[in-house]
Length: 127
Length: 205
Image 1 (cartoon, chains in turn yellow, orange):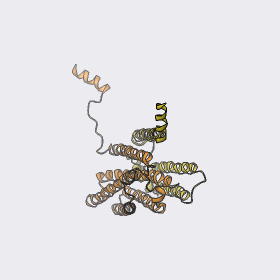
Image 2 (cartoon, one colour):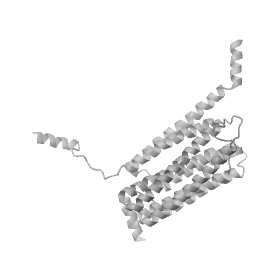
Image 3 (cartoon, one colour):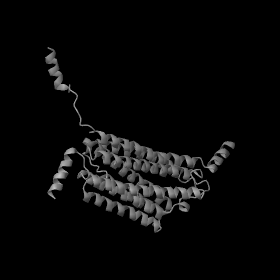
Image 4 (cartoon, chains in turn red, green):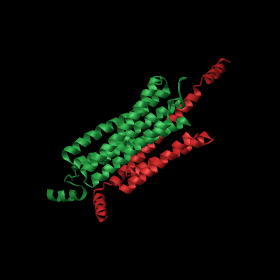
């Protein structure tokens, strides 16, 4: 036991945190639960409201991604003097802008490009 | 005079190049690569989000996807993630045989994942739901296929690393490669969470 502690301390010196057996198992069990619940929910037909089911499933995915980041990728604010965290936050911001922006713009474009809309416009121009 | 100037400069600048230990910045650099890869996947997710409902009067997610198969696939990738974790722990103890054994188990689960995915793709193409059928299927094959390609190259890297460790042991260079590949492997599992949530689960609601 003390040898294990000495070993852990040795690794902390190098700044590489490979985690411990317990933390990997904990992350794995959490991931299994966080995967099984949304799968079970959708397979069982979901809630009456489709939107509620979708939000629940996405919520579980977000939590599971955080679990993977902490227990498997060993993310913390101190790694590489905070640069790992900073680059991750930057990426998350860009990803959110990219996804939300694309979906928003394309949704509105689809709405405005609907054939009947075109037709109404044509009629408007004609009169 | 010049000596005095150098002394003054020494107060403000480091004149001698300071040495970083070899490979000190590798894990940060590799992380930045993974983040750029993440942006590429984000674009593919956005494409799927935009084209995911363009069925061209063809089959939709509910006609095509088999959630039980996806659940098995997810389990394979999750198991391979934890076994890679065990390989890293074995490496931390300096246990070369243990590392190689856990890497082999990881490779097995990775190949199972690829086999199931190829079976799914083959099945879809066989029933006429190939990438050319509709915008939805083009986006599906691009997104899931790109992830599968990553797992394929990860598996090739895994085999390469197993050969390297067998030949030269757990030398610092090989340990560094292990750290990078473990980040790559766990990152692919994170992307898969997005895939099974947004493509499969939301498609089946």
